[in-house]
Image 1 (spheres, rainbow, N blue to C red):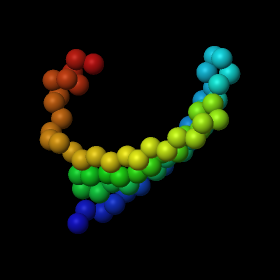
Image 2: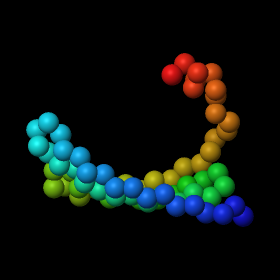
Image 3: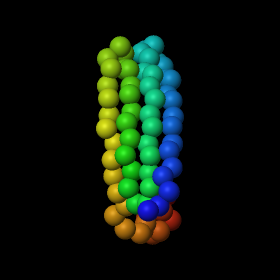
Image 4: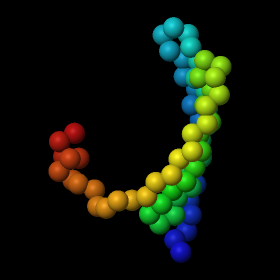
Length: 67
């Protein structure tokens, strides 16, 4: 089994109207899959995101070259 790694982050944003969004997240990944959560409070409304995914295949370097 591949070793697991964890990434964490925080956000603290204020838009031009003064609305504040704050939050934090954590994702753990191992091999070709990841799982995590992100908790955000936007304009006083709490939101919880559940994150998961897996690698589908090799990246297409032709797409990266266009950007």
